[in-house]
Image 1: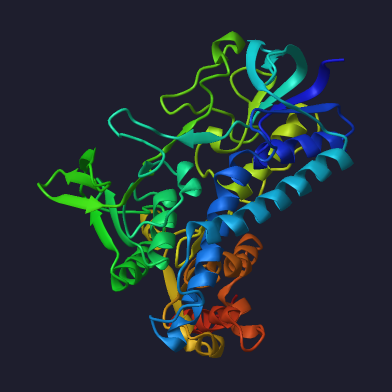
Image 2 (image 1 turned 45 degrees about the vertical axis):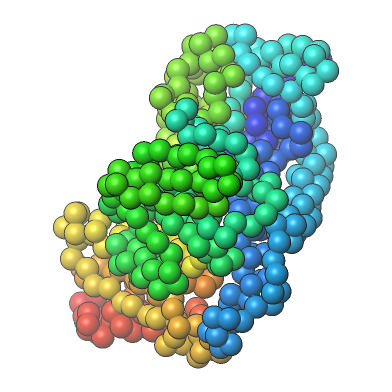
Length: 468
């Protein structure tokens, strides 16, 4: 009864995609989830909640309309934490309902409980009522995701000093906030709360941020943040956090400076959620951040029948790439052929403004010694940008001078995470600058920025040579 072809631990993007893929191949599949509802971190504390919070904040504040009506414009004058939570709960219920329907339709069984290894093919699952089950799987896929890094010196209290999971349950929107950690999660939440008119200070010991993003895009992004009075204390370490009797939080910095804020968000990294799996019983080891090492093509761990996918294997830690990793891992695990995914995938940062990128950055082009040319388009150059009241937004295309192929697409601004897919398709299909010059784009659209950027590069690259 408790024997399966594939046992999946975790029901986030990697787990659910892997489970459904194996079930579609006619295999007997079980998903084990320790949370109250299926969906994992992505649905309940990560991807979906943060993006829902962002969308709600932009809608209620009237952020997108301020280009026309001024910075004082508001859709709702007094926005409460309850306003944000109401939309969040509706969205989460929908996501869970869709996922449960997918499991039922594909005959994927799921079990609520905490799993740990007994041996490489056996898991012990402790259910909420204390009952313990022994589950056997020919193959096991670990898709347990991550949890916030919570160092001992941070006085977390779940109310005014929080990690990124706890932030979703706040009762009152703070007037001021310090965000410690200028990684993707820290930047997303810092800019969302800034859009809600919270006075935000972003703190990070590194002197730079988002180093994997094209430098010109980061510079434009940074300018936009400073322009709306966000404080960026990069190259600065938060040494001490103390709660005062009046409810304020004092943050002492390494350069003798002290901040007093209503709330502190600590978002300096995440840990693989592997500490309760009893990995040693399966012959596995996690690194210092709880992550598992896998073969990047098959997602197989050091133990032949055990696979891992999603955030627990590290970069890029995206819901989109996690889904594909889970699908590939499941196919390999049940003996099916798995094609390698395209080389370039889009990376989306749902900050305010959005950033999205695919392919090589200008810095990587220089490191590899590839002669190149760039094309730039600003959203305010498009008619659609004028209609929307945009005075910011930038699209950058990078082309090889030798082959004229598109090798990088980088966007900061409204709709960046949607727009990037045009560039992604051209890049993976080995398209050239001529695609953007010769093709017609709907007018007026922001996508027209591709034509403007393509022409900008083409004007400097010259017309195509006769021998090509």
